[in-house]
Image (tube, rainbow, N blue to C red; front, side):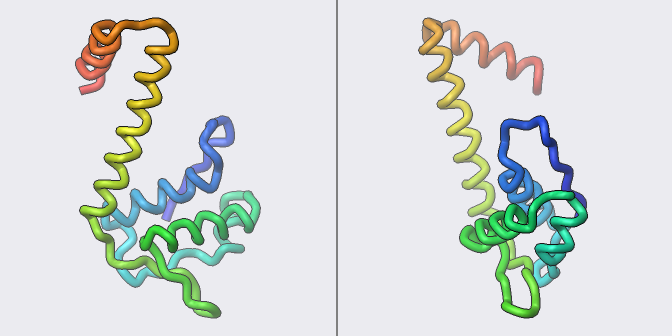
Length: 125
């Protein structure tokens, strides 16, 4: 498992860890039952606090992506791909809602916002 931390990102480190582990599970690169690195091992590898890794693992467990067995480790659960897809879709919707709200706050009209979205879609797709 390869996790890359961007220290210049505005996204908290634990969220970067969560996102990358989720993506690996969804992509099938981390199959069901695979053990994740220990909290200490991953923290040392990434040069971050063990508490940060623990928080990420706890949140992944709360979302059902992993299960922690005391004294054994943290294991990947069977990926519910539909649930994961819906979670990612919701995150995109939230980001778009924030961007639209920023446009409205900046005084842009609905048509101007639609035009910006159209241009970006043409450039990115």
